[in-house]
Image 1 (tube, rainbow over the protein chains, first blue to last red):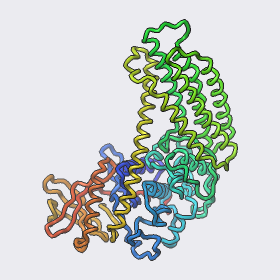
Image 2 (image 1 turned 60 degrees about the horizontal axis):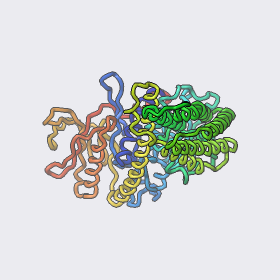
Image 3 (image 1 turned 30 degrees about the vertical axis):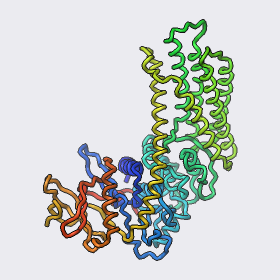
Image 4 (image 1 turned 30 degrees about the horizontal axis):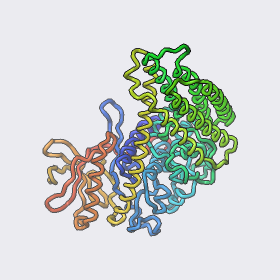
Length: 451
Length: 101
């Protein structure tokens, strides 16, 4: 099927998978036969994910290798879409479904599963050891973004995998449909060499983005992480830095508005306004870092990203100077300190980014995660500056716009927190379910679902 | 043949667990896909328990792109069934078209 069709149909399946995962349900058997298609009313096609949680494996029932069985002796899943941890008979969580989804996407794009081999055993071994094939090398013209989704979903190590198939597909849908470089199209998927640097970069991205799991997850194949663009794809948010800056700015303007509304007269410009001015350059600089890191992930050189990081760091220096020149009116010193802490945390984070860019093999992912978390914490501290701001804004449109961006950033963060905690619950639930599953199941189920 | 409140019309798939039929839900007059578990599974209480649990799970998700489960139950002779939305195409279409090998 065409990349456009795949994005449309499998995007729906990815969203369905996310919904299931958010309910604590692991599908375990993502494959074409469990995707049902129906012509929608408007002429489009609706894709349904079917057969939830019904482990099936008639074709595997005779497999003798104990590793392919659960502790209760059953075979789960279909080998073509089986995650490495599933092959090893380990406990599964949502990331096993994400892996299978990557295989499904590969199949939809190229017409064949990622590891077609002579035997189930060989296919399972390939899931464990062989690099994920690159769709555009099989079918030239497939967009690089879909190559990347497959690579991100099919990382051997669950910790290096995207936690959400839906987010991956939404990210891909938002990318320009530039075909992957045709020069790369030559080897058959089975013989495909190491994933491109961009793919290694994507793994590193996910290590960073999937903060809750990143520290213990090294990239597979010994491919060193090379960079860490935060991406919208993995939930934490490509625009995090931008959001940070917008929130800071919103908060600063909020201070300004509150001061104005409280009738305080200023011989000089209000503190909030000056704070906003001092922080505003961060928006542009951070945007350029984000852009450059994305370009790098798509195969660009690290030079531009390094420049952007350097510029942003310089901008942070002058921001820091401006902050220290601000003489806050009484009661706003705390806000200033919060802003300074945020600037400091962002500086640490960007320093680490620069360090990784300079030393592609640098195993500093865990530290990056920690630093990014600190920056987030600093942001969290600043956030409550002006609750109720929106009600006191009056008719000032720019202030309302800033207020809205601040509020939406807060909502976004709350949502992310909710998702993260839900993920933890889901993981705990999945483990419990797995135990019960292992105790109870002693049969494999039929392989087909309604036609 | 009736199973539960469903008029069974024709088989559409068969597997190790049982069969899937096109059927009509008599109370509402709508077409459904009816999965009926093979009777030899009846004695297997863990299987039965799991079938029900998974049906409940699928029903709980309530998402537009998850195949809706309408009803699950047990016939008088103890066979389990599950009624789902009837969908015409299966995903093997995913693998047809360009790039196929």
